[in-house]
Image 1 (cartoon, rainbow, N blue to C red):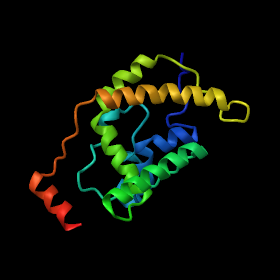
Image 2: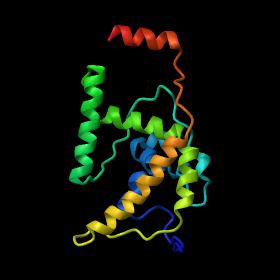
Image 3: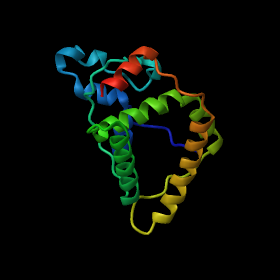
Image 4: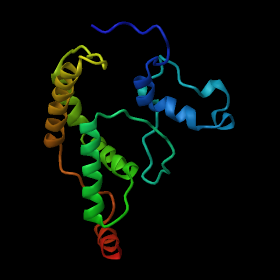
Length: 169
């Protein structure tokens, strides 16, 4: 069973990395924040964060630590989309595309994640690679099942605009 949090904000680097509120606070100036009164508290509901706009400007920087195999997979995915689109996509482009797809499938992903049940997070240190890999593979299995069970993605962009973008590139 999970421990009760003593600190109002996440204390681990990974939790802070995935905390959208912290990222928003970090990228806003003090004038935009209006002081500390606008900062969310630990008891504030998670729906306080507004959904992302379709035309928002990318401004939040995140850092991920990858295994060599994960880095190779991401590089292959990036190369695949670069070749397919004949553009100089960046890793950020591809990651944002992945997040659009994940957002679309979120309800199916939530159902699969709930079926996982409680687990212990394996240590990241040496001699724990097999435990970490087995844990990540269980999560990947649930992730793939959630992505597969979600409804097909339909772009909000009108069909005529998609055809124009394809012929213009």
